[in-house]
Length: 310
Image (cartoon, rainbow, N blue to C red; front, side, top):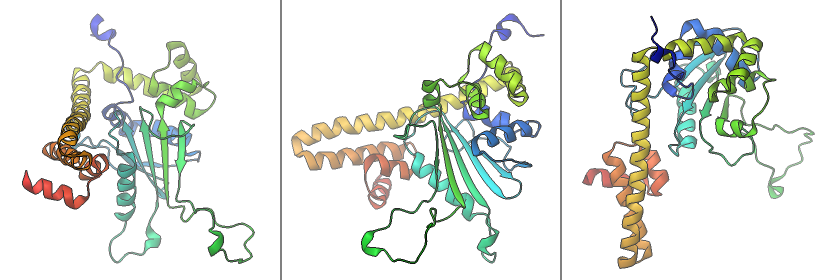
């Protein structure tokens, strides 16, 4: 029996990576997942195979539990979907790492490269990141314009535009979608309104247009009534906030020290020691070395030396 307090509980948000994985990682929701991916990729999908439906044991600790969703489409395309709630300032490195690792892990040493499937990474961001005027950006390995000094007239009227069609990245920035405040004409618009939480009347109209969204909306409502699921959601949320706060703390502390040291020892030396201080704080919290390199501008060798001295 659902009591009044439970009935008034706010639905868990799909913008949580834990909630996203729990919903779309279930076999019973594969049709909805297919519909959602079709709305992003603009292709017809016949079959979806979920490769990693399980929730990691250490999901509450964001250092260990990356809650991505990896699926195979029609046995031809591998798609890695990740929902990111907080800006950890590492989208480029993170996406590149997962894209290349998923691609390279497909085959063994003796297998031909032709066995590799296309890999698509989809990042759904609940914050603005790229300086682009679109809430859905698509990136591929595209050739730059020809250098005139290196131009050779080979008679090609239409040159190849892309170096490869085997890697592709989609970035969806939900805050830009919210700012645009679009209608509900397309499937992608309908799904993204579910993610950001459209008003009740709008969601009713969307549910009539798309039965898969209606099913997921009901699943979210049901999941939200579970105390265990709400606790898991809160644990995960806290872990991510703690990591973001740690990065912010390390950055501010290093900046403050850098200002003091800059006054006493000179600007260049102060900045260098500030970066080292930031790196030290971040290493103590077991943060990713690529993120430390990005924030501090130190080399990998410099960071490894600091790590040995801790």
